[in-house]
Length: 319
Image 1 (cartoon, helix red, strand yellow):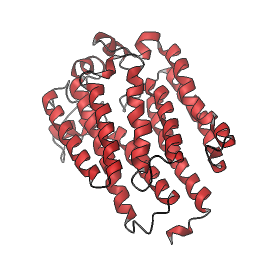
Image 2 (tube, rainbow, N blue to C red):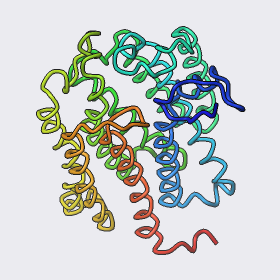
Image 3 (cartoon, rainbow, N blue to C red):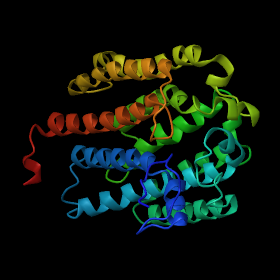
């Protein structure tokens, strides 16, 4: 029997992949790994261009690839640990995952997570000190989200606990590969990403509302309902991009970042998709969740292109 690599397909042996290997793949949640890989890659390239470090890094593409993979392994570790500690909740809301199906044991998933965390940290410190520091901080946030004190349990705090590492720290880590992470641009863009995630992470809690409630986790969705949660989340998703003209007016951002305001439209789209609660048949969450990841990827891409054309004026630096 052939096997489709979609989260909700039944597990079956294929010609090339065993059931257990398929379980390991699903444990790492490949769809969610695309965003940290490509977002970090774009931000690193933006830092390279902005700081004009091509002469210092003649093999810059190798450095970008290694650092992006490091952050991807870090995210994979977080995914594995989260599934290991959410085994009871997943039996209710995500029974198709490898642990509820008995393909992977929770202890085994935790071991895989710790190995990936260690690999990411050791790899990060070989790139540079600041990158290693930010990877360590991200690791602390993601570990304490799932393990005691298990910040996932606490209303409001749980959203911020995801938004800080995925938004602010992720941007600063990526920028630090070639530049000073405390330059104005990465701090502002990282703060925008943090605020966006503080609202957009509501999308992941739709399908888990009952499971979270039964396992002692309070979220916006299972506390206030979807409509109120969407209204609470909207300002966080909308304002970071709507305030770009103000940031430009106060010379906090350069004028060429004005096109970032277009992401207000995408954020409103996430809001309406969140209200609809339409669940994907192949991916493991609602369409708003998928669109949220797409918006973040486009945001990083747009920021990088604006850096290229705003700072350099052309692509001749690649010659």
